Amino acid sequence: MKIALVGYGKMGHIIDQIATKKGHEVVARLNETPTLENLNNPDVVIEFSNPEVAFNNIKVCLENKIPVICGTTGWLDRKAEIEEIAVENNSAFLYGSNFSLGVNLFFALNEKLANLMKDFSEYNIQLEEIHHTHKKDAPSGTAISLAEGIIKNNERFDAWKLEETLNEELGIFAIRQDEVPGTHSVYYKSEVDEIEIKHTAFNRNGFAVGAIIAAEWIIGKSGNFTMNDVLFNKQ
Image (cartoon, rainbow, N blue to C red; front, side, top):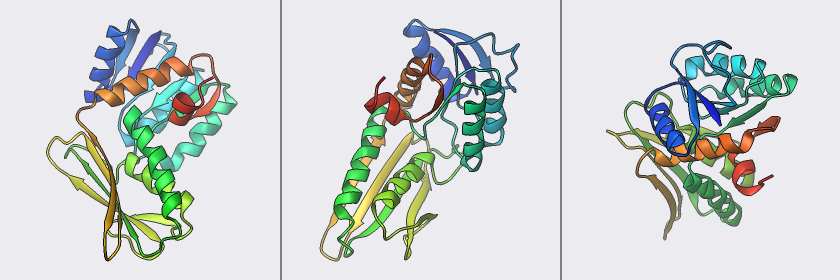
């Protein structure tokens, strides 16, 4: 598989190393805007850049019918536009707020617990995420995905917000601390006890491996996908 890496920061370097070990060829390593020329005819693009440039990066690739795996967060107000572009160009797009296998299992566990707890109003729900101080968006895309999973399964909430849970808004505490790769916790607290589920990433390798698995999976497909399609609805 020929991979173009768009956004060659810490994640890009790790993906490069792991993809090469798996026998794939990295044909482009870009921190500039991708073009048909500098992408070097890849089979797939893996995009981990910045929120300010992600939309245009993805748009260029999809318009050239190159499938895109995107892990950049903080730009999702325009995700629907990208999904339309993917369909219009008969290309493929997969966005993941987190590509780690463990986190995607955690997403499923989170929704299951939210469904179990939906009728127990004596429990207040709070989310917390901790990331390295270099992370530009808050809350994290993973925390937003967790919040959306709870909202989908609990009619008490209709939106999420930063800081403490208040009325119909589910709260997310976003903490920035040294070089933490990513820790996410969901708390159900009553006057007598507390239930907590938690995922802790030890390094970024899990994110990179998941992105490469997604890239391998998307070849030959068209449409819009998530990691659920990759991990739980294999085609």
